[in-house]
Length: 87
Image (cartoon, rainbow, N blue to C red; front, side, top):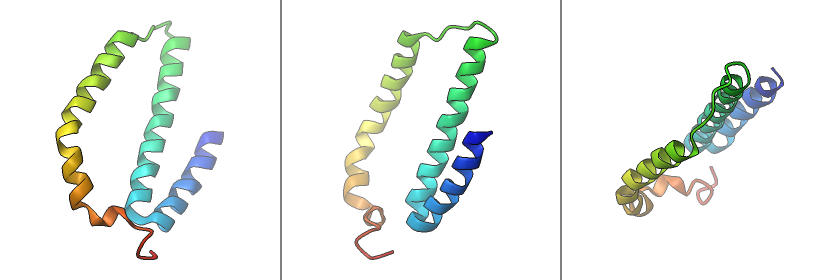
């Protein structure tokens, strides 16, 4: 419960200060919190083990699929430089 009382106001503040990038970061952080809590529940209550090899294979597949679009995002998204315009 403490995580929610910290995360929810900080997500609103980040979205207000940084607009779309702040909202994206807030959504990613809230997803990470739920994943960590779910993994803790699965390993503690049900005795499940996490396969490091399977997790790394999924991570490698995700990164490999994202690599071709990274140059496009870097050169085409001027809205990512939100601090330069003062807002």
